[in-house]
Image 1 (tube, rainbow, N blue to C red):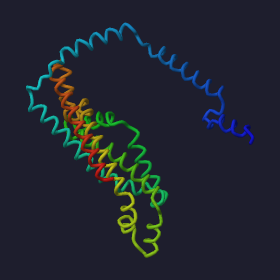
Image 2: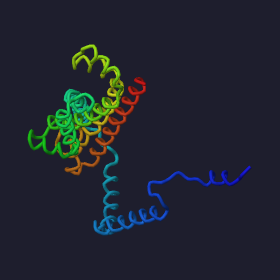
Image 3: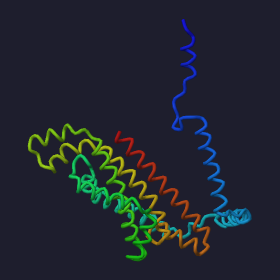
Image 4: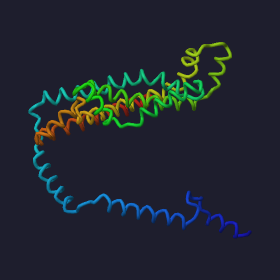
Length: 268
């Protein structure tokens, strides 16, 4: 029995994306040099960093103990964040469904497909905070700007996921219904929806959980919710009350995470 083949099998390694050891070493060296160059150009000041740590210690000391005396303000902010998250998720879903269907290459004509994909790309270009600033300038401070901001983010995310699911589905049921003379809406209802419904429910739950977290962030720029209360507390150096708000935000996000995880497990 020859041992040459066995030795070759033991020495075999899967091919890497670099192709050779020298290329991999050169790539890693380039990454290290780039990081060193980036740190140099950003002008990090070690003295400023040390002063920041001392200020952080002072802030954390003033944040304890948390001040829950203004409980009504906390409750109102939490409820407003929850309302913003739910309304924006539902509104974003209603906008996302027709656009997601139109953005599926295997269902929509090419001009409609390109137009819908363009809308999704534009929707995913800008971060929610940028959109929140834009809507706050248009409609003023308050939850309306928050609802519009998260609806915008929800529509682009859900529409993209829906379009990709439709493009990856089996076309047999669609072709069978078309052969019977079924209309477009009938094809969507009886052939497309059963194949993508479960996954889309999971995506919608994930987006609701994400909106719950984002609703606490966009308030920092004035788009309503508990985040707006937090921003006001920090601007007034009311650190003990800010600590109580941060604890409430953590509890709110944890409840959303546990709830979405429970629902996703039930859907499996």
